[in-house]
Length: 311
Image (cartoon, rainbow, N blue to C red; front, top):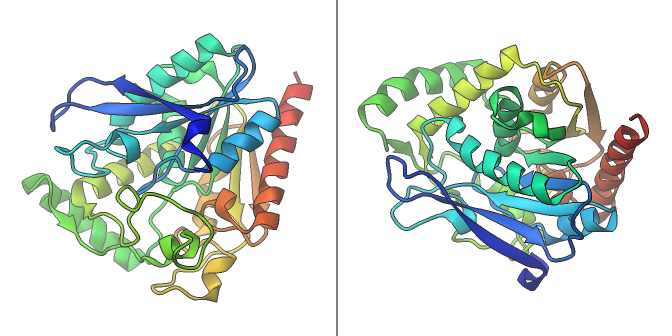
């Protein structure tokens, strides 16, 4: 983040799970005013909140800003835990519910969820099945993870193998399943402009657990019946391509997910869905080059302001 002194972290104690003690972390901007509309940001896989510039944009546009480091991610990762591991994405509903309730009590009653990648999958499911989904006024998705970016053959093989292996060995995993190209494209020590904690977001990633693959696949399937009542904004890049090593292509497109998957699933999330293409956007649109991310911010705030004016 730009300066950790600009944010305050609060540990949320959760119910112990199959690995023991569990916590999540609610981060709030020190520029929050209280008693106004609020945004809660949820990060993606192998990720955590380090987007200090994003919080500043929301504060400048009259929003209070909060972020959540989910259990076993970032500030919430504990020594006895397997990083980013879950058996079901429903595990994250507990911290989402507690954070939404707390923000709702201090805001003017308007809470907006903003989520990136796997966070987009989790929050889309929460908006269908979560306990406090009715407290959320709108859902904004930044390159949500709605399908595995694989060929049909690769996907079938991965899903066929993951269930029996994950069932027999709960921590069975694949090392090096993810390309380091995306992390290299955004970190300042490689080809990007951002600084983040490499213990929490390693360039080579964390292992991909078969149980996690099964949990994600179930989350994908659940969205086939999606009926989100609140307005939804689905943001995505203008192009995407899988690459195994960093190249110039990584500077202006999504090299993690397939934007066609995002559009295909995104448009069916509910009855009030808007698809928004951001020219030359990266996978995390708000980490794109400055002109591109500024455009993404402006388009998003325009959409949010239209929600206000339509009431």
